[in-house]
Structures are given as C-alpha cells and as structure tokens.
Length: 115
Ligand SMILES: [Zn+2]
Image (cartoon, rainbow, N blue to C red; front, side):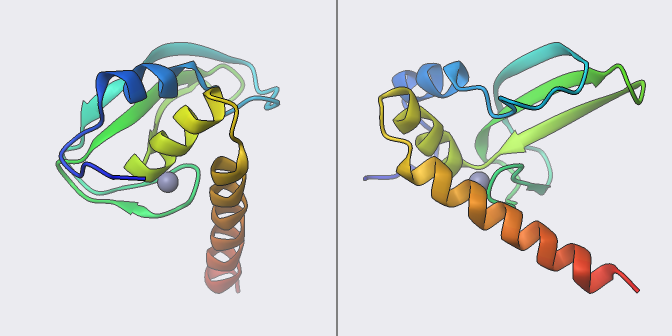
C-alpha cells in the first residue's frame, strides 16, 4: 500500500475515525474529541507503540477518564490509521498484527523498567 508521509487522504481519515480503537474497554470515559491533527512533539502510538515524530498527521483521541478523573489524549501513528481504515473496509489483518506488536512492546518496556 502506498504511504503518503505528508498526510492521509480525506477518505482514509474519515474511515479511520469510524474505527473504535478502544472497543471492548469498559472504562467509564467521556469522549471529548476525536480528529486528525499535526503533532507538535513526539508521541507514542497507542496501538503499535511506535514513536510518532513531530509534524505527523495522525489521529488524536481525547477523552476524560471518569474513573481516574483525568483527561488524556491518545495518538495513533500513520500506519495504524491506514490499518484502522482497512479494518473498516473489512480487512482486520493489519490492525490485529499492529495491536499485538504494540502489546508485546509495551510489555517488554514494562519489564525493562520494572525492578
Ligand atoms: Zn501505530
């Protein structure tokens, strides 16, 4: 699949936003915003755990966690945005692969920082 590093097409962005990345998570949250932004600093992708460079066009989902009483914004890298759009179009392979990759990486990192 061709990847446009400067941004995604309107269609991909629209399809990506239809995908619920936290499906199945039963934390009580209030969604505040869910849109594409240009990042101003480096973030971590919430799905694959890759680093997202500054000035990337990515999905940013902001919500208020009503259990912890705090607001958080989650970012999703360009590749995962494509994968989310693919999922909306009926192909889950890539988003599943990236999700399990992210879980592995997050666990490994957690082990490394653990005493
Ligand atoms: Zn990602």
